[in-house]
Amino acid sequence: MKLSRHSDYALRAMIQLASAGDELVSIRRISETYGISHSHLMKIVQSLGHAGFVETVRGRHGGLRLARPAREISLGALLRHTEGEDGLVDCTGCLIAPACGLPGMLAEALEAFLKVLDGYRLDDVASRSHVLRALFDRPASAGPGDTPSARCDARQAGP
Amino acid sequence: MKLSRHSDYALRAMIQLASAGDELVSIRRISETYGISHSHLMKIVQSLGHAGFVETVRGRHGGLRLARPAREISLGALLRHTEGEDGLVDCTGCLIAPACGLPGMLAEALEAFLKVLDGYRLDDVASRSHVLRALFDRPASAGPGDTPSARCDARQAGP
DNA sequence: CTATACATTCAAATGAAATGCATCTAATAT
DNA sequence: ATATTAGATGCATTTCATTTGAATGTATAG
Image 1 (tube, chains in turn green, cyan, red, orange):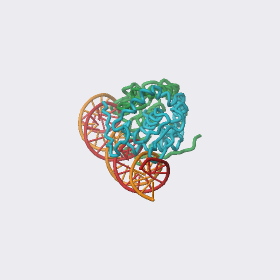
Image 2: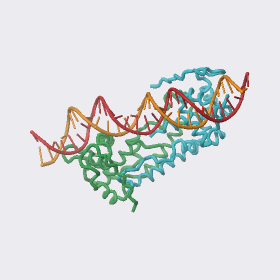
Image 3: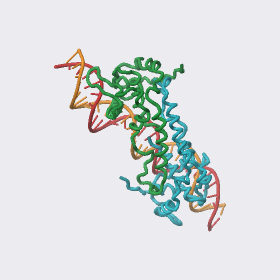
Image 4: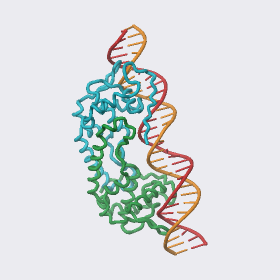
């Protein structure tokens, strides 16, 4: 079982924004941090903006910031949004759907999953914020280009 | 968030086996029940056999049965196997991995998810077994001496 | 007015999952 | 013993959702 990459990137973007405090961070900056597609990240960010997780500022020196303090944004709420409300399985067309108890059980399990994540906030993830800031402040790989070919394999030993 | 189709099909096969009691059910029969690929299901079943969830019987009149009673097989155990042990996210190459607390939180949430499913057994899913049996006994070309050239074109119309 | 950055849409590339086919091994009815 | 059935395994192909790229529009600072 995997989180969709959509959720993965949303989470990463939110972490970087949490680390940046009040400062605006551009989508391009974030996409370069993680070596992901600018276009794709843009769509994810739009979705986050629509849902009220981030504020977007257009025009020169525009960018993003968290719409609320990091401690008020739970991972559960974030994932409930990015993962959508669909069930864990698609029962359309399944012969036994009328007599199958599985969907309910899976829904209950999913709720338990999200409940745990409701207990964690964005600032818990970014608790070692000074370390994170140091990582984010590094000139991410290449300069302004849409194809950062330099894979960052940073496997630095922890503190 | 979705279960892999691999897990989905494994679950469906196990439910049909649970419904069949001691009787052997062939892979082909199951694949026709759900309108899925015989080859693909075979690989899934092999995995289930390897893990000790089902017994396979080769040769004429061969097939599958549960290796243990349905009430002794939990959904959690099943999914732990079919979903593999990998984490919910792939952090290899992620810039902030050294300072990111997310993987641990996700692992905790996943454990809560599986814990719920540990509490449900195969026979809970198939509790309305008489209804299920009626559904399983219905598929086309069922009965003694089925045609080996039977085309598996059964496409369940779905919205 | 111009440069920058978010907003929106659509087409194309990518890659994992699923499928189909060929071949092998094992069990059993005749 | 032989033919037949059904699972075991490997490989090539197809399918499909995700991801990416490109083109265009909108808003804002200087």
